[in-house]
Image (cartoon, rainbow, N blue to C red):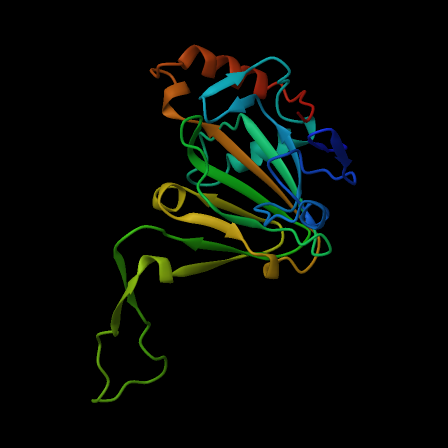
Length: 238
């Protein structure tokens, strides 16, 4: 892909990259002099979506890729994922040489449902969770390990900390499956910092439909169509 920017009568041709507009890499940083929120190469299997206008196109969507059929089947063996039916798969390729990272964000909740499931491959990393907005969190530290004597207290010390000063680091080992649901899905943003990409990492993230597209929802017919296409496993990246 070659990006072209025009200013008046002049035009500037940028070096080829694979960022698809909403994401940028170190190539884009140097050429556009921007502070990039994304620095990785995406491969999407899912419907084309305009989240701002809450519109999607089924045309061109052929389902998840054939190599994911067994992965999805094995997901259903885990407690809490027995009924998980993904309709979108996004493969992300992280590289320390490109400075790959993802800024803190919440995934869309209009189309995508309760659970976000990510398969981490090739190398371990750390997912950083944070919670924005007013208010504070009550943190507790674990009591010291080892034998106790009469002077030890059974109550761990507590500390109230502003939400914006708290970041939770979740270790994500190689070949692990991570599920975000509940507060971790809707209230805590998730990110992958640049410093936590120390080797090439490939992540496949699977998303299910929201209640609006489930049986009984306002767009249940469209949801049923998307699910049928997804389960064909004949997909090509869009």
